[in-house]
Length: 434
Figure (tube, rainbow, N blue to C red):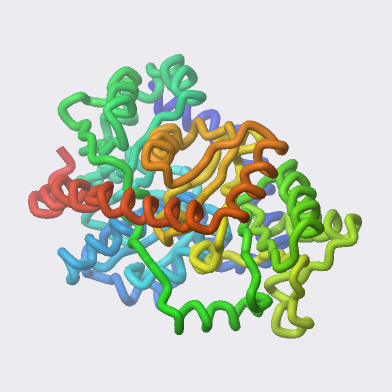
């Protein structure tokens, strides 16, 4: 009954779904071959690296999930080098990140959840195992995988405070879908409790911790630092502040604080990385209106070298970790506005002291760990952010100590990928969806 209701709703919505994605294909320059992949049409020549090899299909919807699953992909390839990996995403930015992951033998767009599309994609890829990252519950994809006796695993699963009441209200719908999963690997005990309350089979629910803790710890050598300074053409002898994954309403706050601090002291430089690169034009207009010189990352090679007091506006993807590694101080966005925050462990893993706002409800556990380790500071508002920036810019020993504690935190909290692989490995060996 659940699947019948879902199929009827999907059929009714299909004209709008197809029209929307057709428009995105044209407006964002996505290839028509990519649009075809949304209907399960994968070009035969693209399938050559995985054909007949029973690959593992990993689905990560966008940038955050793709970055989170990287430690698992590394561990998977290390333990099962003979198993090709198919990595699917939904968004263009997610795909651009996925295509840079060495462990991915084939990167595709995830099919629309029409029965004919997912059935065709599963037949062409013929995976031995399906892995869905976080809470990517697509009813027909899971149903058709089970029909083909393909085990499906949820990894890095989480149920946020905001989404839990909605899931619980519709548990009659979600319980049959969760039953299609052979294992549900959850980030925390609370996430495990919530997925069982929604209808997940308790005997298949495991607490495997957060894959985002398994980011590799990285410190730059002097030669690496110099190479990156030249790549981004950062002014010499400056303190670099990076505001990463920012959202509307945050860039102006950061820029206003930066402008005041730059008037108080020389030798500051701001790197501004909007969460959605397509917002770069909007942010650039704001900078221009404030009279703050800026250079876009995509135009950096043909532009004059940015000066201290200016801004590098990043309108590309896949460079945030390098920029965090170069930074003397980091602000993680999505936290001064009620978005729910972003991953504080990314700057922590490269030894960058981190600031963030009050809205961290999507990363509650990570926030508590960072604060307990004294690897970062939480601020309440724009005044608090400016005060924290000023204090830490004037206190190098404190900045360095925060960065070192971030490295220590990451070293102590690793191992989630190995815990996930214990469960995934059993399913790969048995090949059973039960």
